[in-house]
Image (cartoon, rainbow, N blue to C red):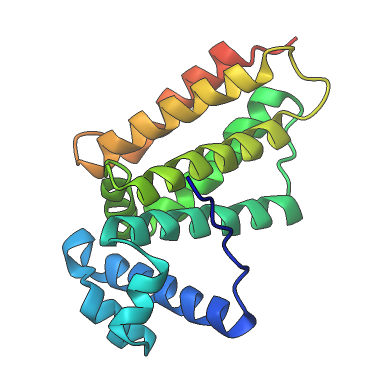
Length: 194
């Protein structure tokens, strides 16, 4: 088996790729998952259809990459304005609440990107792993030092509960207040104050 190396994107290619992601996010924010049609994305991004498919294998891949991009932007915001709680639990909950506030303002976009996470498209699955790593880093940064020995396991479990609680919100059977409450319980159980 021959392994190929992908070349880094040029600035122009990266700009086109970002325009495609931005267009998909805008369409999803307006109309949800069904509103994201690759032809409409290409039109909105002012690129050819072939360009969209050059960077993204499917709609699910594109939306999963949009979520990666969105979480990367949140991570940058959190880095410039870190949580200020006195304990790891309070800092983690503050960061997660800030993320929930952002998501609560874009329910159609959140629903669209979460639907893409259930895709079996290998490229979308790779995004799922990247999303998990990004969320882990956000939580680990909020925990700070000194951290429990099994902090990575605790962070991963918080991520699972965050995802599960948000699925309930996306599907309309759980209000955002319940999402917050479930996260608060998880954080308190997994990061008890010393």
